Image 1: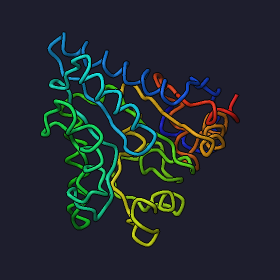
Image 2: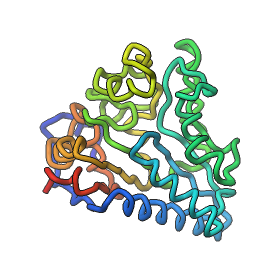
Image 3: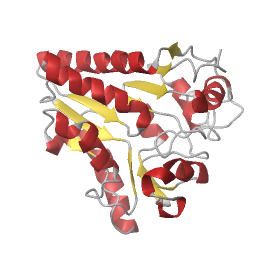
Length: 262
């Protein structure tokens, strides 16, 4: 990985070649990789540690994992999960929280121990939120780090809630959500004015600490940002570019999202 000094926008790197698959096939491929990791770890008596994301992009992966549990007996009994982020000020029992979303789409549909399904807690004052960040990072370290991290990419190049301006060495923290991010979330909250202004997120350095990263991007709305993230300068103006410094980060996109990248 690049040293901390390589954080400015004039640093460039050769563009990785994205893996181009239809969204449904991409979901199957990534779910199968996760299943193989989980089974291999179980065979050695170890736990697989998965980093998870929310939203439309990874939902196909979760549906396929649920199918593998139902049809092929894939067990999550030896799995620990950590989600990337959560809204500040939204209780985990609120159906709009990321915790509730994960329960609907994955957690409650497989044999994952609820005590090992971690999502940041975004409720509390500034001191409590800072303590939650420290606790959450310590929990990841205590299990030896994340084996495979799923991420998406926002229309402004954010990863998790690491908005433009996030440095490569950023760690878990409270962030102010950008106007672009809040606009993209407006439908789920019943209007822009109801979208939380802040989120709690793992930082770029925390994401890059995962042993493997799988970025997914689907749809025509993502093609411009995918092209910029793959081919433009690496720097905080477009946080997703930092993933190009990771030795095992794969960019898996559908034909629509790949239409402007080489």
